[in-house]
Length: 142
Image (tube, rainbow, N blue to C red; front, side, top):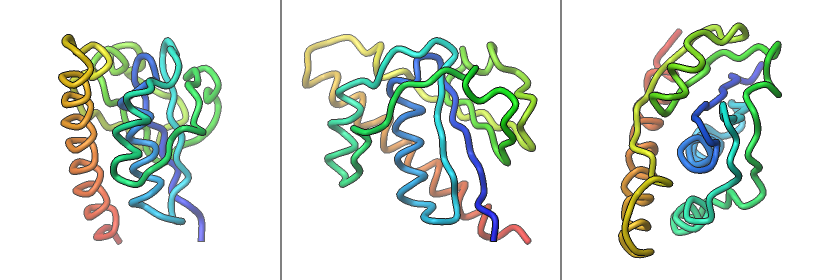
């Protein structure tokens, strides 16, 4: 059986899309081939790695990639997770379905380390909840 292919997009591919990639890989299991990319890749954010490790998901081996690396590749779903990426990539030529899920950018959160960690955890949990809801609709589809 063919895997469902998913590409998560955001601007920096440093936090939101990286966490979404790790979460879907974990929650979706073997039925999904998951990638993430950014319109302006900025490297994997260490706080994203840290808060994902807290829930037992290791994304430390993931790398920040450019959306250009995936042009020409077909995806069943391309999901933008930030408003700027949605504006930059309103149409992805290889996508069967484009979705947009707007999340705050935890990498832009002000404050000290503890305050920033809190924002990363909140966004991680929001992404997890959204993926869980989406997976229910995918499993219910004929």
